[in-house]
Length: 411
Ligand SMILES: Cc1ncc(COP(=O)(O)O)c(C=O)c1O
Image 1 (cartoon, helix red, strand yellow):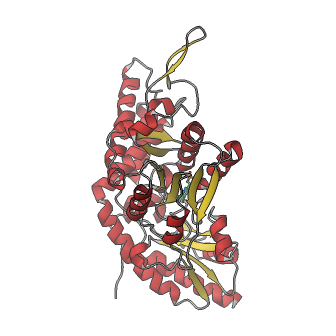
Image 2: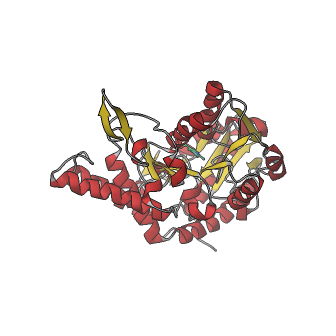
């Protein structure tokens, strides 16, 4: 008998808690992950020992914290294979990173009639900013369809490319289906068609589940969000190729992003990435993100990916044996990350979520901020169980027991 256990489980204090009197089986990490003790400690250390604002104080605490903050920028650059820390912009989250690109690069370089290609499996964070831009300046948003298995239709993708295409923006791993998109192949296809087309990858789920190398990917922009990467909420990252960032105007104005402000001679801005970081940043959260990245590097993204793949295989087989259950997103497991989206014949996803809650099992139910995808699937909601580095067989078994209970209650 297998018993897949996570060697990292005990690093996450929240997982030893109970929910409704049952051991917590936390299967909602695609929404937001639990935090390891080292992240909590790193943030606590700043708050209890060395807190100040950064980039401005001449005194020791401020200088030390500024150094730690900027060290995180270097760590992130190494973690995702960026050329240098100058490619790394700290944002609030992935959503803000995409809005930054839309409003800064998009408004500076696009005009009415230019085309942006996105896909039917995008999170709203990679749809709405482009729709807003379409309303503002008349760009046209084109959408790559998704097949019944939950894969991108790559032939349709190719046929949408045209002389008017200026940007393609797509998700690395679908949060709603778990599909891993063939980023390298898509980038090759787009670059071959026209090397000037900009490419943005939404790595919010991707960076969590496997090692990322943005230089090898050859993308212009890559965004992710800290809270899914075992770091706190309120911090995200936008990577950009430096010449592209350098050519973009500031997104927001304020302190810290200027060189000089004068009513007589005008304003000059700092260079990228600083010109995109107006105002006091999320200092403590950046330190937390740095601790999370150290933790992931120490434990090896490849080992984490291998553990999750093993558990996904177990979970996929087990869940498909539950009577009346339909799995959505049935790509080959080599093209799937640890996300299981499903519906049941007898019960609405909200009912499933409520029964599971009583069993101590936390899953997400709803449209997963991917309403166009739900529309394509002919659904208004699914239940979604998602795996993380700390997930183990006991969590999956608790889920399956809970789903069998749903069948007893609603069958
Ligand atoms: C694929 C994907 N993109 C973007 C986001 C948005 O992340 P945030 O709300 O942290 O900006 C999410 C969050 O669920 C996501 O899964």
